[in-house]
Length: 326
Image 1: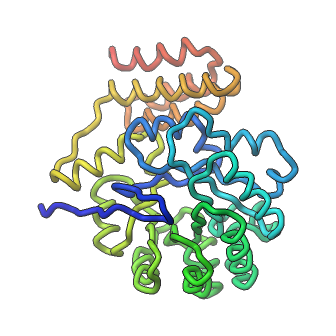
Image 2: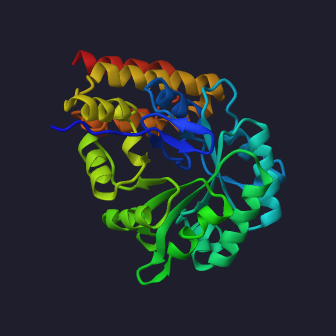
């Protein structure tokens, strides 16, 4: 196999070696999750998407989302909104607390976001989207990037009118998800569209959609020529994916992570969550993560039922040890 070359990715002054990046995932990308990804070599992680309006009004839940104290940089933060003044003010706040990159979201398909003319709803209003981005770039000194989908729905509100203007207004990179808003996460990501974006602009293009293993990572790079890979769901319960991809790219081999190592990581993430949050909340929010670590395990449904009903940390930790002993 020919060695797969990944060139360092330059976003503003930030240089990212092996640019396989963890996407911001709502309700997932908390401090514990980010720390485990960083432990496993992921060079750039993002906090969860956060509302510009909520930050302006000092919403404590939103401010907790972007708390990166004790973490290893670089870390990006992603904003959503539609009010230019609110976005500018909140961006300056994010810069002040340590954001290395500020990403603006024109990709979220959630109905409650779209209903407020935010997220992927801005695909319908490229004039406003570009005005927001132009002002955002001027409001901070850190690089501004854009996360965007290919369009709103088939045949309507294509992203290209926005994408082609980004370099002119100072946006430093594009994270492009190869699906329409109306697809949510169904169907297949359109890598041909990502290729078209790469061929249409000079700023870095990071491809997103359907990368879940080293083989699909290779395919998206070869198919699109993109400058990096943004992975969301592929990292769930699998923080080792970055190492697996790099090993495959360098040596053509995939080393399967043992269940013992997977479960050690699960417990480490639980411990990180307990350091960061009150115990009851940490256990509640870790349930889905622990369930993802059990993917493919025999009797997984039985174990997930225990995870989803217990409130005892010792039960959770003993559960993973018991599975290994069987």
